Amino acid sequence: MTAKWRASFVATLCFILLTIMLFSAEASHFAGLRVFERGPPAPALSKAKREAIVQTIQVNVARLQSEGKLMRTAAVDSVVLSFPLRIVADDPYYGYYFIPAFVDHNDAYPDQLLDYYCGKRTYDMSSGYNHEGTDYCTWPLAWKRMAHDEVEVVAAASGVIVGKDDGYYDKNCTRSGDWNAVYIQHSDDSQAWYGHLKNGSLTQKSIGDSVTEGEYLGVVGSSGNSTGPHLHFEIHDSSGKVVDPYYGECNTTTDRSWWKDQPPYYESCINKVILTSNIPDIPDCPEDETTILDDKSQFAPGERIYISVFYRDILTDQTTDFTVQKPDGTTYFTWQFNSEEPYPAVFFYWYIDTPSDADNGRWLLQLTFNGQTYEHEFNMSPTLTPCPECSGSPVELTNVTFESGRNCECSDSASITIGTDVTIKSGATVTFKAPTVKLQSYFHAENGSTVNIKQQ
Image 1 (cartoon, rainbow, N blue to C red):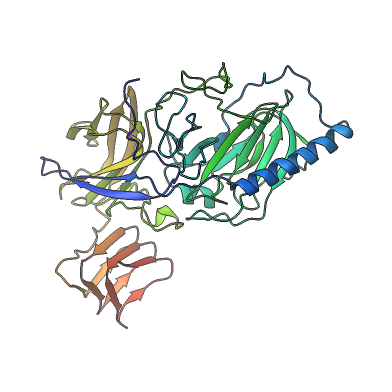
Image 2: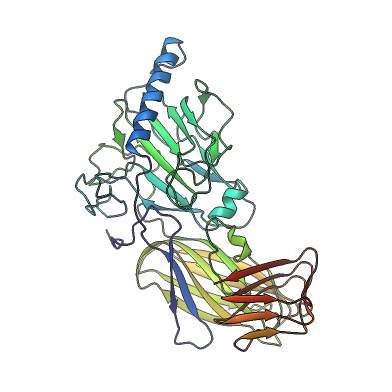
């Protein structure tokens, strides 16, 4: 193993965040980051709920067997699994998930952690609970992807539906309530549990119906004991015992990998690159992230561009090379970056100030990380007016217009007064952030504009 996660970082709470600000020695760019930090752990299922699910499945299995709809046709515990997620979004992406927690193989507790790779990417509780599945968190834009049904849960192996739970609230930001789930029994009598699904998204098939490998089962959600959209994927062998499908030195539940093609422990990559004209941030749970992280492709000369890079499994020995190219192919700016710590999921952000006489046309941001090159295009157009200046403290805005196509942010540590002749044009998005935001009667937001007021 080349690195291990900090024990304090491993979490199943997919959306509790810590903000850290870093300042580069280069005056021409700034770096900040948002990382996941561990929150109070809780079981994916309460003991009582787990027992109730097992009992219901047992009753269903007995009935289906008596009806001839369920029988073992393969050697015991011989199933092989495909990946249980797929993305159907149209927007550019490179990856869409990360894994904060595998099965815990150390029965001791608390904080006695051991995953299949002999690392600590799992969790336990002082009550005696040890994590019993694999958690796949959608990353980034998890709430946006859930709202638009962009990450689907699919059958990892063919089988018969032996249980379904649906109708429960699916936007939990704290751990509470029951989950929506599908339970599949395979031809070798093993089972797969797919939990925390979106309410109303479950397959229309009924208990007793067959599903094939890769078939749609539902949409990733945040139902039950969950703090953000993710899939809890849990495998049981033919005797009902929890099995970790990932083969490794410290996996005591199996002597083989249950995957057709087991992914590596570290899947280091860039999941997404987003460009904005406002400081990137994560909105309050469960708000759609695109209210702040709305990827832009059009900028005005002289405008500040924020570059957010969403990493998965970034390690300390990995370098990212950045190049910004002008329309004629020449280099405008380059820099390198190394993370000081490893993270399962993190986004770093920088800004560049484009020149007021920037060449019009297609610019190119190119990133090289872990042997992979990622490209993100944007255009410079003089027809776009930069965001109005938001200066002074407290801020008092008068006689300014936020033009169509702009995504602007105005923030202050004291207060913002939106006063005389302030207009937000249709197609513009403006975010005002301050402890106090005052709106005067002269303020005008046209139909089709978006105004976000965050008093904080």
